[in-house]
Image 1 (cartoon, rainbow, N blue to C red):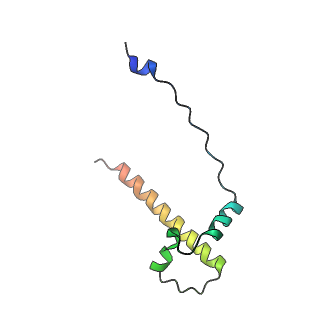
Image 2 (tube, rainbow, N blue to C red; image 1 turned 180 degrees about the horizontal axis):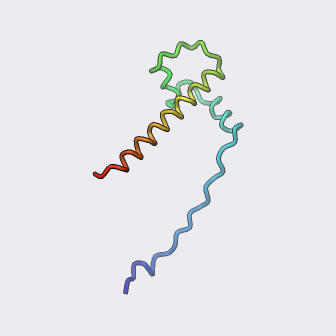
Image 3 (cartoon, rainbow, N blue to C red; image 1 turned 60 degrees about the vertical axis):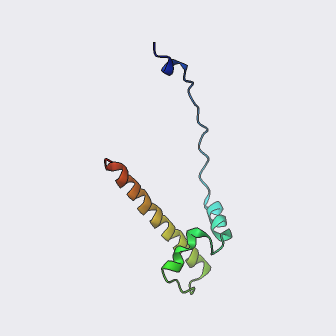
Length: 83
C-alpha cells in the first residue's frame, strides 16, 4: 500500500495577481530614484545626462528589459545542458 500518495493533500495555490497597469508602471518608474540599482546600468554605458526625463526613463526601462531577456535566455540555455 502506497501511503505517501494517498495521504498527501492537494495544495491549492492562490491566483496570480493582475499585472500592473501602464499608469502604475509609469508611477513606479517616476518614483524610483536615479540611484535605483535597476538604473545603475547607465553609469556603465557613459550616459551624459543630456536626455529629457522621459527619454532617460525609457532608455533605462529598455536596457533593463534587454538584460532581463538575456538572463532568461541564459537560464534556458543552462537548463538545456546536462550537468
